[in-house]
Image 1 (cartoon, rainbow, N blue to C red):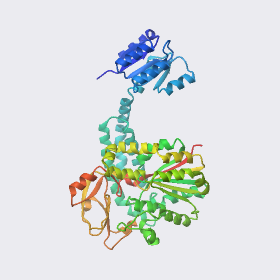
Image 2 (cartoon, helix red, strand yellow):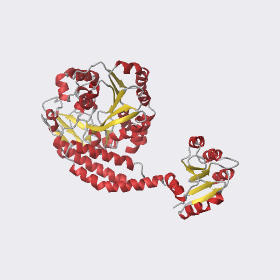
Image 3 (cartoon, rainbow, N blue to C red):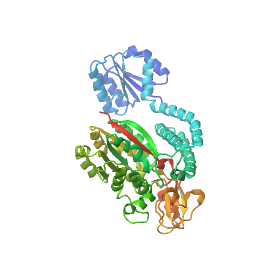
Image 4 (tube, rainbow, N blue to C red):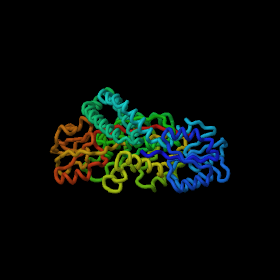
Length: 519
């Protein structure tokens, strides 16, 4: 294994012999220079893993040397060592992107710690994260087996996401595979839980019923409005909990997280069903019955989410809340610019503001259809990274920065999540069968009952019945439906894509976050 090479630059380098011997005994390769010019010459001849640099040197100063070293080896970490604690010196050094600094006199352990922090950082993170997950693995497995309530499953999924994010920072591919297997195990157990309990949540007096799409606003938003507070409801379509966690630090620069929770999307976990249920406060069959002019079935032509504002206003009136609201669906950047320009007027004129943003949904579909996006989002970590990069540089974040100047509660949520599908299940249906890859609705469907969640009585879970023999089937875990005709092409095209509509932790357990401006 190649030794870590360090260049130590100090005009009193001879006095540092004990420190250098200490580091050499620890296995580091130490080169020295007594002035800035010699350091620059050495950096031009050899690639170093780390620079130790004295701030106060005669001739070429530490800051001047730092600037030159950064030009030659811009990615090499620099640790500045200084006698002075003057703020302007530290500001200049940090501005030139030093990685750490130490105040003289330094002791060997300080130096060793700084090296580990800047050089062995990744390895130490990998070791500690791997050890921590190995320790938690058995406990988490027991929780998966013992989860009996909807709330238990929320806790399990939060822990799985926590470890997924932690392990994504390490370099232990083996632990990634272990976690994938544990997530698959969790999804299999979660499917059994949903099959056993989902229909029961719609009985007259259900026990342990979680917050579902139709009750979300009633439980999480209306109480705030009833206190007289202003609410900005941001619905990011297709936003999973892990994606929320990677954009959270950007939002937390301007908003404080007051409450972070998960709720259950209804099934199908598809926009037509879950988002309409969210805004109407009703299950799909209830919307179809009470407002037939606002509901479109799967086989009907035209958009399926054209009347969300009307549905929301009906729900607000039902609970005696003013329906004088701002409602905007962001289809392109121009919409955000217009809303941002009018933000002062919008906030002052409305108690409730709603904005729907479809970027994550677009990303999911683009990854299926476009080769370049598939390569950019080749795995879950990359998929999260693209989401974070988009949000960090988006006009939406600019709007939220401005929103933080007002006395407004921000609520971030979504209508459903998405899962990366792997295994195809054969299904045969008539021409007007639903095209979604994670659920099918139609007549005379042919499938293996053991491979799906089958609902032959749609009214039992408040789904519309388009004809007397309508059946719904749902894919579970990472499965997806493929037609018998041209099966191999279909499987190759859709495998490893992100889909929604079925039953999984990723699709059903989704974020509802309440935030307040930091000001």
